[in-house]
Length: 149
Image (tube, rainbow, N blue to C red; front, side, top):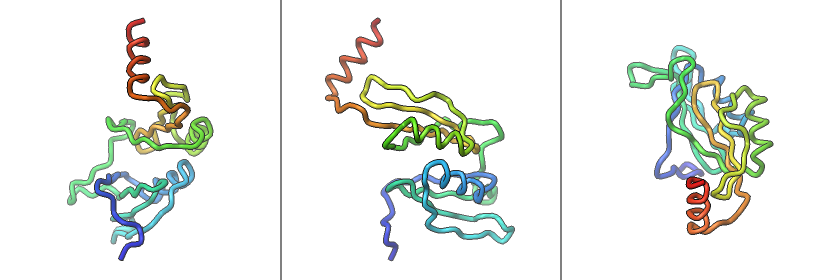
C-alpha cells in the first residue's frame, strides 16, 4: 500500500528529458522524487514527485501513448500555483535554477504576493504567498476600485 494516498485529481507533465526536469523541480521548488520507472530506451517512462503535499506525474515524450512535450519555446496555457512561505525567495530560487520570470513578485489586491515563472520545459508556475486574510466582500470591493479607476 502506498503511504502517500493518491489525490482525487493530479496532473502529468510530459517533457523531452524527465531526468533534467526532475533535477530542475528539486532545485527550484524543493520537490521530492518518489518513484522513477526507466524506459527501455534509457529515458523515463513514468516518474512521480511531490511539491509540498501535491503529487505530480511526469514522463518523457512517447508518441505511442499520446504523450507529447511542448514544442521548443512554447508556453503552456495552464498555470500551476504553488503556495510558498516567501514569494521573493521562491522566485529567486526558481530563476537561479533556470526559470524565466513572466511576472516579478508583486502584492495583489486579493491578499497575496505573487510571481509567475516559466520553467525550462514551457510550464507556467505561480508562486503565491498569503499576506492578508480577506473576506470575499473585501476582495470584491478592492477589485471594483481597481477596475473602475
